[in-house]
Length: 378
Image 1: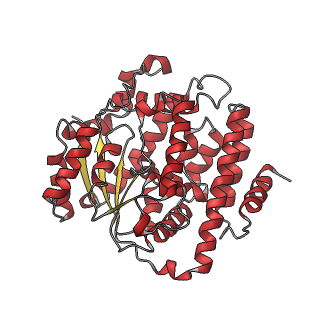
Image 2: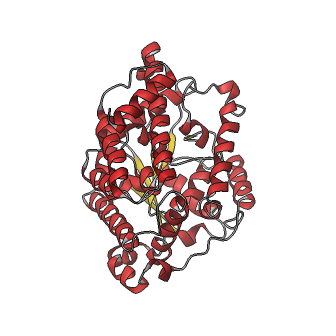
């Protein structure tokens, strides 16, 4: 039996369930596991972590399908037009999503429910669900394994998270690229049709909101820029808020982040061309989104520069709400200010990195992204 066959069999055995829904996930699972094995960049622990993660995701998918089987009415849920946070990583998008998450009139995808969406959350226990404590334990384990990580991208079990975890249920997700250098999977992901991942994304959102009053979702992931066409196939009325920052502050920080995340899972240092590979990916993602904007869709985007959020983010949030046609109440403003004041950027320590360590020439990087910097950061 192949590694993929073993992983699927193990997931079914552990969950005592068999229905994985349609087979859209299968091609990505093959690309991920076979690619990691062939890459030679994952150590024994790295391959084991990837295998266990695949089993866990398949178990979640099995459970999602079981809930739909027993409650087909979940499919009738209506997802209101979402607001998606876009923009390069390290541009303040996480802070923005946390601020927007302070508005109880909208719904964010929280860390704990993203990792364990079944059983569907209940309004009465939403703030005390035992999965919150379980997610906190998982975050603590990651902090122990990669202590640098929390200084770069601190997380909370009850805070908003990116869409990548639930897209990974279809094994079409940039989440996997953070675990190690798997060029085969990256190349497959860049060329595949991402529509099925967004359809499954929507399937999970319907499950999560099933027992709650319908509220608009506030979602985010920088990686959505690379697949904005597929996103719009599933969410044709979506709007976007896009954060911006000087590219020289972005790419070195992203590479440093991935370095810390994969440090204990790989056989050696990052590949010499890792930084160039990352800058190439984000250039393509930006160009794809900007091409969509320039094709008569500029009115669907709202832009926020990194400096606009500091030292006080509320004026930028007020402009965003006005653009959305929504009222930013005094109560929500107070909640946002409290979050901002209690979560300074250096709360978990300072993220230090040296671009030269990764062979990054900042002048060349700015020249590569001149099309972006001129438009949004100057």
